[in-house]
Amino acid sequence: MPAPPGKNDIAGSGSTPSNAQARAGFDAMWENLYGTAGLLGSTGLAADARAALRAQLEPGITAFVPYTTPPAGWLKANGAAIAVASYPDLAALLYVGNTLNPTALFGYRTTSTSSPSTNRSTSGQYIVLPDLRGEFIRGWDDSRGADAGRVFGTAQADELRSHQHYIAANTSFGTTGSAEYNLGGAGNRVSGFAGGAETRPRNVALLPIIKY
Image 1 (cartoon, helix red, strand yellow):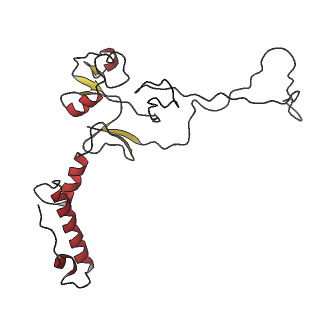
Image 2 (cartoon, helix red, strand yellow):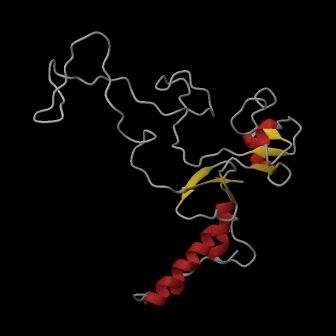
Image 3 (cartoon, rainbow, N blue to C red):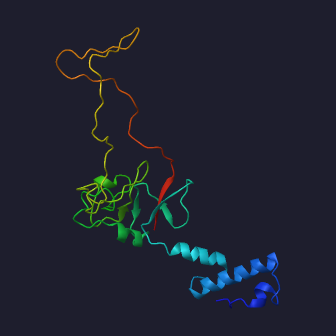
């Protein structure tokens, strides 16, 4: 662990420090701080501290990043089946237990990487990651009542809230002049289709990753 910086290391005999002295003093304080916390490697460099801090992140944490390749220590959250032996900490946290293993959306064990959902086994050597590709994340209701009855880790289809559209009586939609639509006769009237293939807000596509 490096020694704490002295006053002269930062300011130089109490005078106003130069930019170089200030930078050197900051680096010395940084390295001492993280050395005291036991986070520096044998080289005593600030880079070691940053790497050590990254290593302290708990397995299973998910994030979204603006690049296409996961950083060191992370995997794509893409629903892949990964080897339990290669990622024991993550596998232990993700596993849903023997009871849910036959039905869970993710976190179940399997014997196959190519067809994991049809080869589920509580003794399987692989475990399936969450697949967050193309998904919006919603906080688990956990008895609040905003999304009542929702089971943890389940998927939910898109939906529009129930609402009405009003058409003034005896207005019309025609091919010439003013639009016209006659509401006479029995039965409901429906409009033509509008919109795309899904309901969605404005969004940006980023890579979902999970810590192992």
